[in-house]
Length: 244
Image 1 (cartoon, one colour):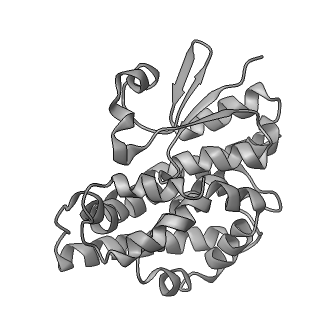
Image 2 (cartoon, rainbow, N blue to C red; image 1 turned 90 degrees about the horizontal axis):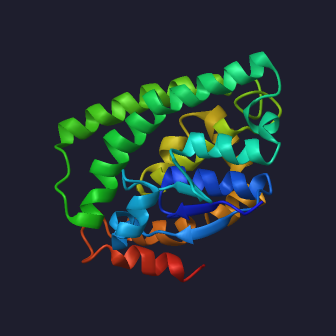
């Protein structure tokens, strides 16, 4: 069987999650770098794989797929290891699916779409104006409520569903570490002790470190920009390539 191709930008949270799972589960894939900051996601070639021009995306022979959770399901299904990552019994599957649904309606929305992108990233990448201080405070308050919920989910075990890492842990952590470009990241995460412990465990895993090495290399540069645009965003891809 041919290997699937993953169209991947390591600065994308869901893209890092798919790559991390592939490494963690030893899934055979080809990685094709597709840089958002170079506009490669709107190329004619890529639009044939994902007409919605988003990474990650997958091509497996004549089959194309988008959306990180769908891709993670597909990749583990074709390799016969889905039970390890999405649950081996009805109740565990239901719990993991609950967490994957919560990701879209809470974590991804409140952290990334409402805060990370408009407040932290787009001003540096494209020179967008930040929301007002009052608006940012409201966004932080909403994010705080979400993190308190997540912290409560991690009271009993090392991972979201107990003793074993699942796809949900991978998806969540890849999202949260995007906040490293916030100057207050460390003090912010420290408010949620169970979540902080869980993140520390996940970040110690070799597959996390390999899949996030480019982000860990470039986020200090974004942080050093102090919220100011640094010319063309192509510099982000160029910085990432230094460690690939």
